[in-house]
Image (tube, rainbow, N blue to C red; front, side, top):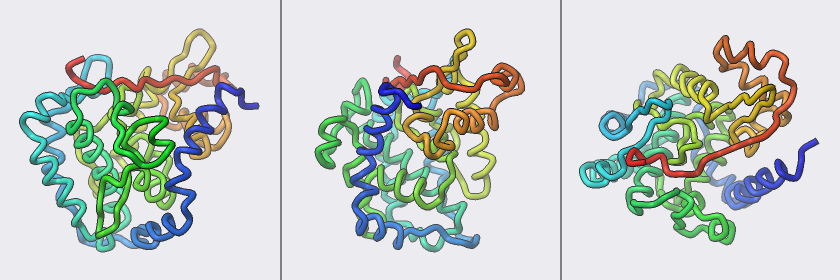
Length: 280
């Protein structure tokens, strides 16, 4: 049975998703406009600008966390980033195959998140940025509910992309290892742009990197502490402790699998909302 300590974060996430998922007509409109393609096409999106920006401003650290040099990024490259985001907004997503669409939405989400942070930098946490988006956004902070994007003439929020499109329509739990919320506790922001051609391998790399990092799992004695991501989105990971552990084992290193072999439950969850800033 879930404790109150676990139920409260789950309730907050559920309520937080309500404006995106609960507005039936709105969500249906988004789904109709951006339904994933059932086939592959030759059309691709050029993500080389985003790839170059990531390689220039994302710094791998010895602790395994990729930190962003926001100060330098803002001074030298934000104009190029804004141009890239604008180009993505003008893309006809319907002409892309399924894998290319997935890569497109992840890159749009991640690049817009960085752009929003740069607009408000310096900040201690992305939750200190409030762009509006209703009562829940006012309470919790963060830019996720604001309609900060316009794709094909349709205003979209970051939550629309994550919850309605990526989680709701693609239904691949590995999205949680791909989208980045500019926080230390999040799976790494990749130093490579996602592409349709490399999508599955990229998702697997990200999942493995997070699961095998101390930001994903900590074993303290015989007690397992895991990232709150697995609690907030339990439904995407089987809905139970056993389901979460099964997903974790799927991406665990041989050494971690051995340590998890007799584990049947999760002791606690943790998360760090500090900005993933290279200057810290």
